[in-house]
Length: 78
Image (cartoon, rainbow, N blue to C red; front, top):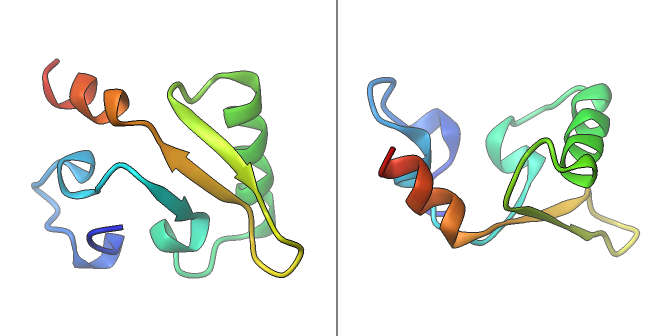
């Protein structure tokens, strides 16, 4: 991740400041509630969040995800 959410300016598009790549939910929300993590997992699995891939976890860390580069391109050029 290029920047954490709390470092972003409110008037900037978040996707414009994030690199495509791997992230944890905690990169976006410092202390996310457990149900938010479950929602994100299910939304990615069901395809409700397009072009995000669930990478799993190694048993010690939270779930890891990858933002595909096309997602950022489409968001910025709409």
